[in-house]
Structures are given as C-alpha cells and as structure tokens.
Length: 124
Image (cartoon, rainbow, N blue to C red; front, side, top):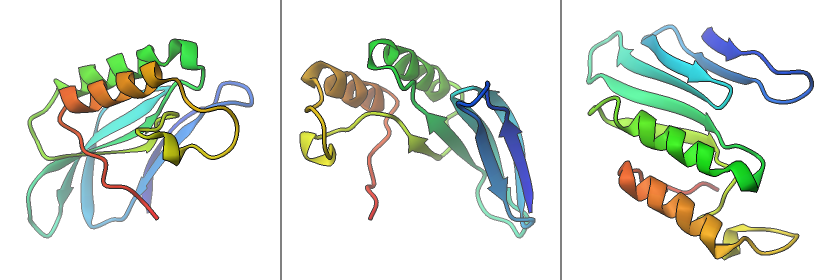
C-alpha cells in the first residue's frame, strides 16, 4: 500500500490518499483542501487524474472551495475523477437534519461543477 497525507492543523483537517501497488501515482498538487494526482495503471491503460477534495466547512468562505475547484479544472485535459466531502449539496433532499441549505450556496456549487465539467455520479 502506498499513500500521501496532508497533516491536520491541530484537531481539524488532514487528508490522506492511499493506493495499491499496481498503480503509478504522481502527485500534482496538494493543500489543506485537496490532493491532486495523475494515475497510470502499471499493466497499461489510459492515464487519468484523481482529486480528493475537502470543501471549506464555513459556508461564508465556501467560495474558496469553488475557486480551488475551478483552478484545478484548468490544470489537465485528462479524464478526471474528483471525490470527497464538498460540504455542500446539489439538491435540498440531500440535506438531512438542520436548516435547509441556501439556494445561493447550492447554485454556487452547481456552477463550479458545470464550469469544470464534473458530474455527480451519486453514492449509496
């Protein structure tokens, strides 16, 4: 098993990305909110890109996350998988408990995804 980590600051944050030995993974960039790598199967196959993403928790500063996503979107034309905790929803029904999300915040997230041509593939 191979991996890369971004240290936590105090008791918050910290990211980790781990992968199996049959992949050649090259670090492209990282921050407190992302790890971006290129991935190439050792047995052959197309080179692709993976980004592990952690959205800014404070909704008032979430635009920083979308600006980072936009910047990352300009860095490569490869097939791109971006996953993680964006700290935002695309639809009100995805929010469980507490107050509903502000439509402005949802639309900011949707617009950022559209601009970098990412699609939600969902999860179960």
